[in-house]
Amino acid sequence: MLASSVLSVVRRKLNDETATYRWSDAVLLKYLSDVERNLRNIAPWLFLTSGETMSAPTELAVTSSALQLDEKYRESEANLVCWNALSEDSSDRANLDKANQFLAMAVAELGMKHGP
Image (cartoon, rainbow, N blue to C red; front, top):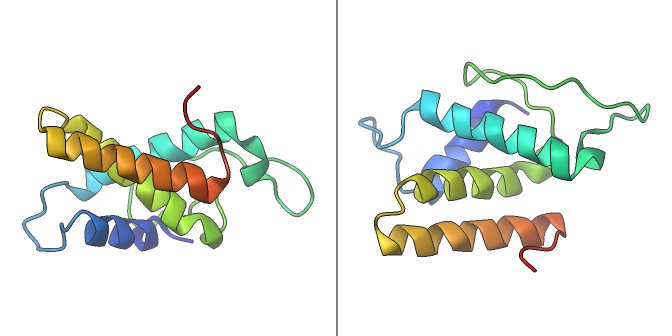
């Protein structure tokens, strides 16, 4: 799966599909790299290859970068990128509420526990 496939979902969810983007590709790629790095730390089994070895981490620089996670996690990754993007704009209470909704969806999709 390519980074561009996750970013297209992210842009749709954030209503950021017009060419004068609110979030640049570089910013969204940074968030996506952060998501993959954080998931690798808290859910390493998601990165196991068929030979039961861990895939090597990569820093995403371009939208054509290959992602480490399987395509079935596209929505979860997109929701976590949306959470990152909207959390950065947390001075707006509505954005913070929406960010938390994206986080809750991702946590549920990944079957993880959120909070205490």
